[in-house]
Amino acid sequence: MVALGKDVHSHSNFEEIRAVHYDIKIAADFKAKSFHGHVDVKCHKAYAAASSLVLDINSLVIHKVELVGGTVLKHEVAAPIHAHLGQPLKVDVSSVHGTEFVVRVHYATTPESAGIQWFEPEQTQGKVHPYVYTQCEAILARTLLPCQDTPAVKCPYSISLTLPAPLVAACSGTLREGENPTKEANGDLTYHYVQKLPIPTYLIAIVAGALKKAAIGPRSSVWTEAEWVERAVHEFSADTEAFIQAGEKLTKIPYTWGLYDVVVLPSAFPFGGMENPQLTFLSSSLLAGDRSLTNVVAHEIAHSWAGNWVSNSNWNDFWLNEGFCVYLERLILGEVFKSEEYRFFEMSIGYQDLRKTVADIGPEHEYTKLRPNLTGVDPDDAFSKVPYEKGSLFLFFLENQVGGPAAMLEWIHAFYTKYEGKSICTETFKADFIAFFSAKGEDAKHKVAAIDWDSWLYKPGLPEFDPSDLLKNSFGQACHVLADKWLKHGGEGATKDDLKSFRSKQIMYFLDLIFAAAPLPHELINKLNDTYGLMASGNVEIAYRFFMTSLKSGLKSVTPGVADFLSKHGRGLYVRPLYRALAELDREYAYSVFKANRSRYHGIIRNAFDKFFEQGVTIVP
Image 1 (cartoon, rainbow, N blue to C red):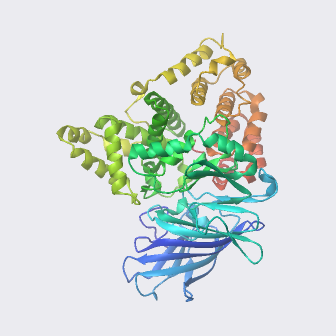
Image 2 (spheres, rainbow, N blue to C red):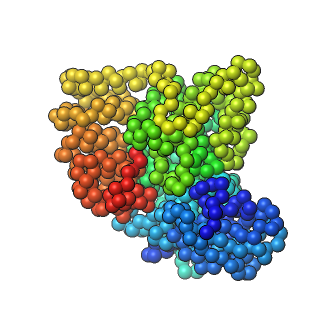
Image 3 (cartoon, rainbow, N blue to C red):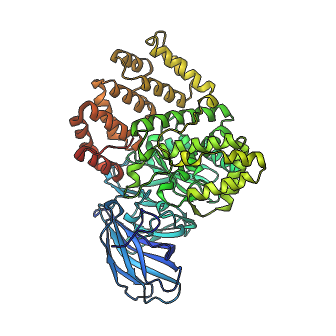
């Protein structure tokens, strides 16, 4: 058995021998649901006597390991320490002279490789060609290739991906050989992509299918199936470039990645978005038709600085990615919409989400700490809004301590400039923040010294800091007035025109207020739906909230609508709470719905609800 290094979620011995580049050459076999080929791992020895290279693998078949040049190397696949970590691949490099060398691992993925989702033609929009995509965050890159699967290691990569014609591939990098793939002798097509900037393995991304590409900005395009191109262009062309420019303006750091493309994935994708460099993945659930869910794009663009450029070094420090990203996202939205009040409105919703999440998980639970101890825990099992919203709230608290957003952004610019391309831990963040503001004078030094760092970082539950008074805004107030009309006066005088002046996010918040008051009389819920047409809304966030309120109130008449919703959407933000709520109402029915849809869900969702229904394991909201 190989002992774990400083990252408890990786077997790799990156402190002894570190990967400095991956060159992946694989072909897709859609019938076998497998990629096969090899990866060249360029390595650097920290000291010449290091004799063993340890890589992470999970659900891979290893055929051969050799030095590039032909010398076969002894290797063994050791037993796993924890099931979710896969296995350590230990390669004997004692015969390798010098500190630089390249190991080639011949391998194949398997249908059990959880980071890869394959679709039959009938599961796609076009119904003609198959489709595949990868989702490697948090620790699933090891199901795609042998690697040092830890955010502590960042390096460039290149990939050559062979597909049956006429399928098209896009990857998290730049197409290397013009716009045309290489045509193989058998008619297959090989696409060559390169990512020149250092990234952690969880940002390696592949999507392949009957993809089309259309411009949505001067440095951005959308990739998707032909059936969605027009809708996607309409949805994302208005704001994408504005969000990028706002991020550059606020951080005073140029967007370093060149292109910013997005791909609209099937709705089975388990997240709203994924910030793969140069190829943000977005769920088709975001195609609301009214551009109401483009805040997800703002969030993924914010990752261009928070997470992609300066990364958390391990998954206990996940908040350094997501807390900073949410903080920047809301600054970007405030900048683009020219409204500090709207920034506060978004933050107030986030605070309510945090309160609800902490209540659902339990205020003393380890997962409600900003920096939890996830030793022995699959990071996906601990995934919640806590690192996002508690992290963002902490940064807002710090903003108020040091004098406002301008002061905070001055530090963020210096911080991200200092650590560009690096992976950091919470202690590095803390030390840098203290040093930066302590140098601003005695008053700033005193304020920083007064921060209760341990409570913010290591205490479970809600922090003592309640931002409600600081975040009062007209957007939220209008939502409270309308909610009172329903909750206090039974909807008397309500009409369909009530929502005409609302932004879509206000409608969501209004429904959150209704949900918070549930269980409600069934007559009131039916009247709410009849007045506003909530169940039939094209906005997935609105329909989701209506269903959650109905289930919490025990309204069984909506269960067919919930089942239909769950057959179309696979985002964890929706399906996790809906299945939990449906199971509380009728566990047998909920299980039947899950079994009917299991094959179309991503492995992250399948694994969670296999445990939930078959073993009774609690699902984190």
